[in-house]
Image (cartoon, rainbow, N blue to C red; front, side, top):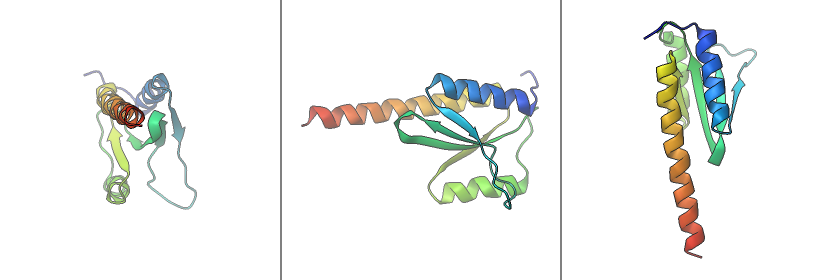
Length: 111
């Protein structure tokens, strides 16, 4: 696995989310430390909070607490530290988009 800077991983995440038809908004919350880096707003109402790291690094303990806090509230929240991890996330999002399309189609067919 090639080592990538946080900026490279973040750029790749933005690019891949855009390919899905989504947006990867930069998230900054004045007065609140350790918020995740990106809010990925994807088709079919899918929203994922993403902490981005580079060079195979992992989130700090306070960053992990923030991710876990979001998860406990029922939100999708994760971290990525390489293109491979971004690809894994994109695959999960694609599966969820397809599931929601199938569900939606089933609702229209039953009318």
